[in-house]
Amino acid sequence: MQQPLEHVPLLERPSFETVYTVGLSFLRQALRWLGVAERDVDDVLQDVMIAAYHALESFDPGRGTDGARAGHSPSGRAPSAGRRAPQAPSPLGEPLRRWLFGIAWRQVGHYRGRAHRRREIAVGAGASWPFDLADPGLSSEQLLAREQSGQLVGRLLGAIDLERRVVLIMHDLLDMTSADIARDLDVNENTVRNRLRLAREDFRVAVKRMNAEDRRALRDPLSLPVAERSRAADEESLLDAARLVPDVPDAIRRRLWIAVAHAIAHARAAGPSAQASAPPPA
Image (tube, rainbow, N blue to C red; front, side, top):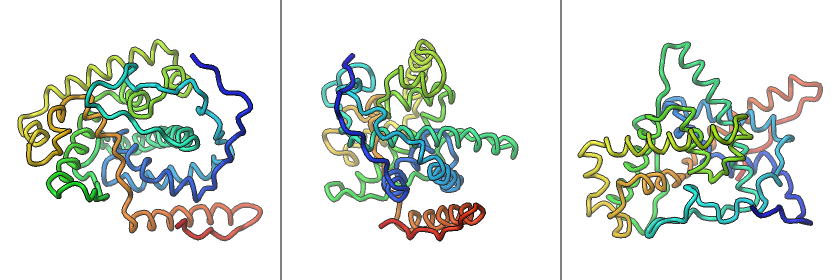
C-alpha cells in the first residue's frame, strides 16, 4: 500500500454554504440507498444538513486524500470491458462525501427508530426516483430508462440487510477501503469483508429474481444507448447506475435551504450570541 504523500498542504475546511451546494444531491441519493422512504427523504435530508452544520468544525478535509486509494477499484478488481470506471473525485470532494455519508448513516438510524415507533418499516426507495437532469444526448425514452434503472437499484438495495447494505454502499459506491469502513463502523476488517461478500451475494440473487417486465424494460433496444444494452441487467451495471446522482430541483433546493437556515438561525438565537441567517448559496 502506498504511503501518504509528504509536504502536501492541508485543504481548507469548506464553508457550510459550500457543503450544502456540493453535498445536497449526493445526500438525497444516499438516503434512498439507505432505505429512507420517498415521502421522508427531504425531512431526513434537512436533519442531515443541520447536523453537518453543527459538526463542520470537526471535519478534516485532509482525511482520505492519501495515495492509498489511488486506482482503487470498487470491487477490488479492474473494471471489466465495457464497464464505466468511476470518475475521479476532487481532492476535497471525496473526504467531504464520506464525512457526509457518515452523518447520513447516523441520522438514518434515528429515522428508522421513529419509523418503527410509528409501526412502519423503512425498506427502500419509494415509487418515485426524481432524475431531473436532462442529458441533451439522450431521448426522452432513454432518460426514462435510466430513471427506471435507478428505481430498480433502490428496490434491489432495499432487499439487502442494512448492516450488509451499508458496507456494499461504502465499498462499491463510495470506493472506500475495507480498513476505512472498519474504522468508521467500529468493526474489524474480517467483519467488513464478510458483510461485503454476503451483500454482493444478496444483490446478485436479487438481480436474478428480477421479474421479466423489469428485465425487458432494462434491455429494451429502443430505450437504452447502444453501449449500455448488452450489460443493462447485470449487477455491476446496475451498481454503476446507482452512481448517477441526479441534481436536486431548484425549487426543492431553495425550500430545503430556507428550512435549514431557519433552524440554524433559531439555534444561534438560543445561544449566547444571536446571529442572522446567511443568504442561500447561489
